[in-house]
Length: 341
Image 1: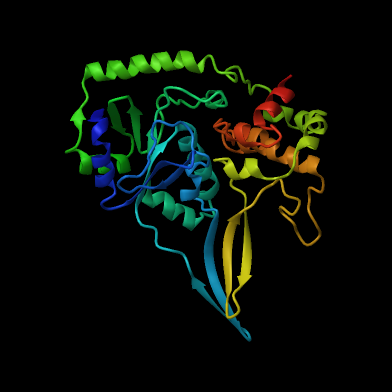
Image 2: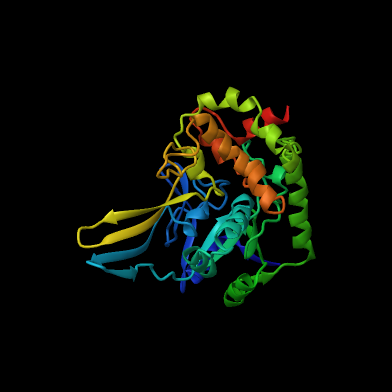
């Protein structure tokens, strides 16, 4: 483990930024979002949760795939992908870092999404441990360790010191380039970190969702949960606005569309939402014609379908964004509790 005085953070950011783009949580108009760092930027590594997750750096909201022209019986296709330069996302929380494991399972399994693959190859994640949590956080329900986050590099930020630990080959390569800035942390430093973690555990254990149980969500209960009357009781309040899907770090549904530019067609990929009536619309119609079916599909996928096909990995990381942002206060926590009663 290495350490760096907090008053040298801008030196660290500047060094990282010399040969790659650096993104950090930036505060603007009272909102916290990941943005490109520059000297004087209002970075806030001390804040817990950005409005949106860093998912968009790897799975962009809109991404051009190809363009093509049709000339009688001939189709000319052009690859329009942009070259991805190396970049670093600094200040990623454990929940968001874990969401990338889920996205990897979706986009890096055959057939591999080469657009996502290139972004993952060129992107480096520096995580920040949480010593406190929002009341809406429930990452511990999914066995995510917010005190020891994953990533390429993990950091622990105190009032005057940043502790740094490389966890991957990419992280070790970056650390080697930056080693002139750091000091070696000693046993007393490690003890200090452990003491803060112990205090933080007590805080985590006092949060409202600390007892959230997922025991009912097992493959053998699939049809029982699918046919539960809970869905009828809960779905009607849903506005189908899609907010929950667009702020979720693990949602990965997308659509492929063509845009006629006059002299050529631009094909692009864009986020979609299972909460919309035209989602998965086919020639014969939509397989889920009611809002109840769409509402149920979202939570069945996250809690039953995905873990059954991915060694028990739930498609939720407990970040709490849906709890914070749903305009009618409907969220996965309420669904879990209702189905577990």
